Image 1 (cartoon, helix red, strand yellow):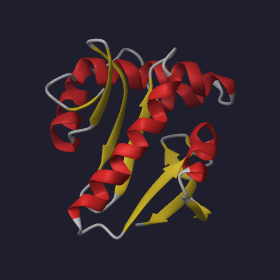
Image 2 (cartoon, helix red, strand yellow):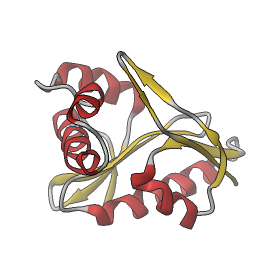
Image 3 (spheres, one colour):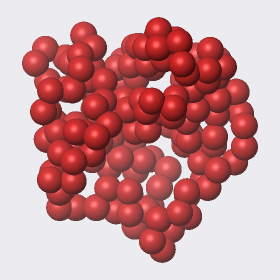
Image 4 (cartoon, one colour):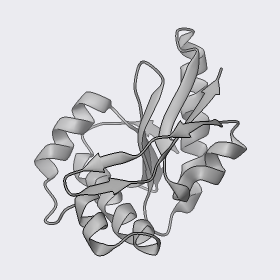
Length: 150
């Protein structure tokens, strides 16, 4: 079930950290993983982020199994599934597309993604725009900018 954010910032932060440390470990170095999701977890930063972004949450029972951030301009921010719940990614993206269409003001969705979600975005009609490397202190990551016109 997809719900609106209601102060579940600890669970959202946990899903993010777990996704980065589990999924990214398949194609990133430990130093790169630490750049994206440094430990220890700082949930106060997640509270501020979630209050600003108001992510859509996919609930598995009462727990957050995944989340997606959709900005008012159509930008998709973090889009993560908890370890053991990869089935949350597609419904969250489908929901974000429906919400964006319903606003009538968003003409396109865009995202910077890595290889972990590339095939999902393609299945939903997103097209390659450009390589869009992301830089964090001491690291440069490969990313792909994709767009879907509504």
